[in-house]
Length: 152
Image (cartoon, rainbow, N blue to C red; front, side):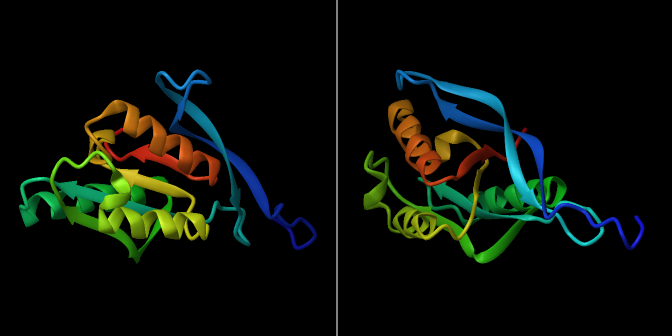
């Protein structure tokens, strides 16, 4: 690239994400276009991402495994993870995620637009209730945040 040719500050890239159909009855796995900042050499800069890991059993190894899997996925797919945006918790099967302390912190950070992608190992880490999962994805999408499963 010559000195006269500078890359545009942003460009689109396609990635897999999830959304909820308009009737709110089903999750749709789809390709999404992201609008990412481009560095001085024309490379996409990392998007800020958060990680949410949950275990009902309280096993630290289970939580650590989920976080490691999400970090590995982030490294391959160009997501930047700040340690303050790694949310881990052990809890029971409470349906109301806002009763979960770490998820509440995550959601508050999402409202402040501190990250653009939420990584989970599987959607059931959000909840085993599919209607709750769809509601969470819908709310995060309204905030401009894509939910991505880190096992794809």
